Image (cartoon, rainbow, N blue to C red; front, side, top):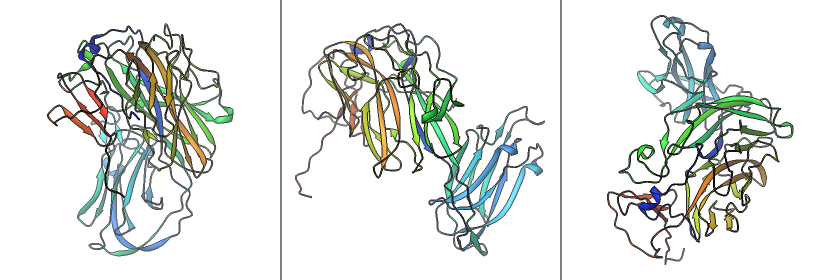
Length: 462
């Protein structure tokens, strides 16, 4: 079975033009559990003393922290504090007892979402950056300067020497159903009309009560700088300004939801008028763009699968495949299926196809989505653009625990040249092997990126 797509055969494809009038080449949504499981505490043991120093920014009432182990046991915690500009009042030092020779995690939190950092005008004297450190004697075990976001962490371990012995006791902890939501927006920077959004409104509610008018809202803020995901070679450093027929950038947005109780929850972005006019999918920018995910924490607390490739899909007419796999951080069971692209969260809020369906994005095509690998394969002789959506469902011990979705624009093109079932390539400056996706990329003409799958066999009986 063909495992990877052939991204582009010839340089001429780069300069074919299929006019677009909006700015979305795709979008997907994932989530990560960053909360705290419930624990009665009260476990004791022998450890060593360490010193925790926390210096908050101007807004100490937003800052808190704790120290946990891999099982979620909490050994120490602090904050929220009070707002203050004075360095003395912003400095908080405590001596705690922690177990030795165990990987521990310092978790910092900021309820506002801008890290332990306040701007230039928050206090006389300028901007303030908060910090933390964990010290054992004169040795710094871990430290940080949280500059952005709702939270983060760093790991460390305590040596069984150098400071007095002590008895540690784990703290009771209330279950906090806290999730970090990440939305990736794939921006058509070559054919765009508006610019990429500055942020997204994310809507959420329990699954049974969710409607287009009944929901809670958080803001997903842009994080970092956009990254180029255009499948071209390294000698084109800025595809958005290279005069190509297409060029894509990935924008990432994150935010925090704290659910009030365990339930089956639906999350979705505020519908965005961003779909490109396509040949067989939406026409004249009449359909909004929306992706939906399900977090079912009724029984299990889990993080979603993470897509292992970007959804920039180019297919050759006659039959081609696009790899769409994902990795689950909790090693839950995954399954893949085609699903209707959405314009809003409701069951009937599906994107309209000018000609085709979500099961056949190109009319008359043979379209399959491998339920095990996520490979999307389309056999068609039609050229042009359409849209497909893939749902990745996860389960644990036979119980469904959620799903995420990806919405992707697909180009079908006539590819020049002929394919060979077997070829050899000598590694060089323009070759790349991806051990995660088992693909090999190289640039035959200095600008066109070719990618193909690698199949390995063994003559040894295992």
